[in-house]
Amino acid sequence: MPAINNDQPYKSVSFSETVITELMIPSYSNFGGKIHGGILLSLMDKVAYVCAAKHAGNYCVTASIDTVDFLQPVEVGELVSLMASVNYVGKTSLVVGIRVISENIKTNTVQHTNTSYFTMVAKDEENKPVMIPGLILQNRDQVRRFIEAKRRRQIKQSYKQEIDSITVPDEYELCQQMLAGERCQIAQ
Ligand SMILES: CC(C)(COP(=O)(O)OP(=O)(O)OC[C@H]1O[C@@H](n2cnc3c(N)ncnc32)[C@H](O)[C@@H]1OP(=O)(O)O)[C@@H](O)C(=O)NCCC(=O)NCCS
Image 1 (cartoon, rainbow, N blue to C red):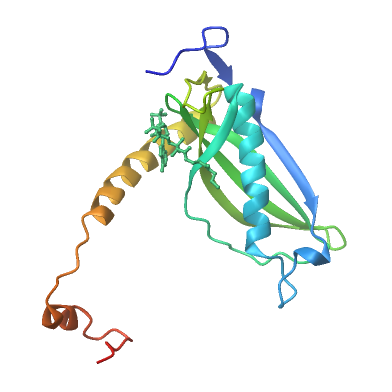
Image 2 (image 1 turned 90 degrees about the vertical axis):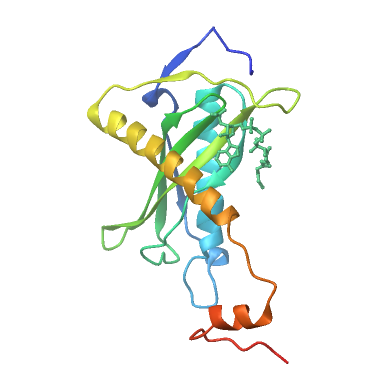
């Protein structure tokens, strides 16, 4: 059982809220002139780390990232802002919710590019998961986010069990039946 840090057993959401704004420069773009998804993922990982480490008071690692759907392309020259806050805490892990927006400073337009949830785990000096402070929820949104994150965590656990239980039959004929209608061919 990880050790409890009794010095700061609870912290508010606002204590660790973090915003990073970055200018999208040409070297971040792909061949189509839009910003690489990987650049945005890297920025999301960075803001998640800052937010998580502030809450945990310890180093953190990224354990998992929920689905990231890119809703809008981001252009060179735009400002991308990533707003992160702790949505949920477990024992040694916490969930950071990140909202990403892009801003065109010439047209003064703001677009929501994506929202995602990063699960971060706090580690001690020996690289072992360590207990993190609890979370003080101060408004309805914070309560809603905590409950939603708890539910997502439960759904993810049952989804993982289902994925792990997928098996493929050894028999060639059965595989052929399962692939009927799919756009693939088994090479002879
Ligand atoms: C993630 C990691 C810390 C889990 O370590 P572990 O020894 O398996 O720890 P545990 O099973 O005790 O789990 C610790 C916590 O992490 C959570 N966790 C572990 N794997 C998880 C996953 N894939 N998704 C979400 N949460 C996860 C557990 O639910 C637990 O949370 P809780 O304490 O709040 O209940 C470990 O696998 C690790 O260090 N991975 C590499 C992380 C890394 O390097 N990230 C950068 C990638 S480039």
